Image (cartoon, helix red, strand yellow):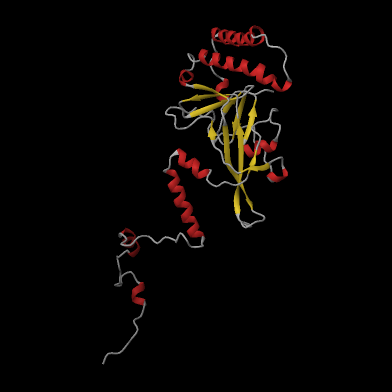
Amino acid sequence: MASCSRLPLHPFLFSASVRLACNRNVQVEASTAKSLYPPILPSRTAKSKAAKRRVVTEVFEQLRSCTAQEKIRALTRVQRKKYVIYPRTFALNADKWYQYYTKTAFLNRLPEKYESAPVVDESVLSEVRSVVCNSILQEHWHAKKGRTFIQKEQEQLVTPFLRNALCGLKNLLAKENPVLSLSSLAFDPQVNYYWLRGERTIPEGHRRGRIEPMRFQIDDKPHSQIRIPQQLPEFVPLEAEISAEVPVITLAPDLLPLFKRQYDNNIFIGWCHLYFYLSFSTCTYFSLFYLSSRDNSYTFEFRFV
């Protein structure tokens, strides 16, 4: 009659003993085997973090394959009140809060990449000097303009001079820079900036307690705009440390001279992006400054001081 008995474990502890071995690697075979069922994903309508994460991931994947018009539409689709910032100040780095919210700082010099540029021929400088002098003579002597009101001084005296000088310099320097020969010049374009920066908690209303991004809008109208068919090369790499650090402001926009004034979200760079060859633009104001930004956004500007 058979009876149950326990086997001692000592024989299995020695190397010379016969051991029970299994060479089957269960985990490897399970990972290499092809699944017969689709992956388990969280529901889109569930009130969970996984469901929200899935919806956000699908939206970003869809936006990556969209055109430029569809991306702008998706960014400006939600119409809510936003902080309206004045385009530029006339003083150099006057407002620290303006530098913080726009992530820009003005430097009264050229980038370091162009400081060691080759010396320009004296003939080119003489031609540039003659073009500027002719523009000044045309406005102040040949036109014989009298004194005007202070409010209209820039409109009647400085603006025509800058218009003539810019057209002449563009045509003159086209032989030195072939990109200028392919560029086009526009005057008084409408430029709109819209961006999201930071977050805030809604204090009251039916959306109370929700977290939403803070929206900012700049409606600008520069004097002129040079549109070029290709992107400008970067002046400094993204990893470079810029000497002019943008100041950090810990105050809320409500405590600063910023006010919520409009609902419309406008993104426009001065020209219709449906044009077949106009892809990038450079806004020009009055008085040459170099605009440096942490976000690797650079432009040359002319501005009255």
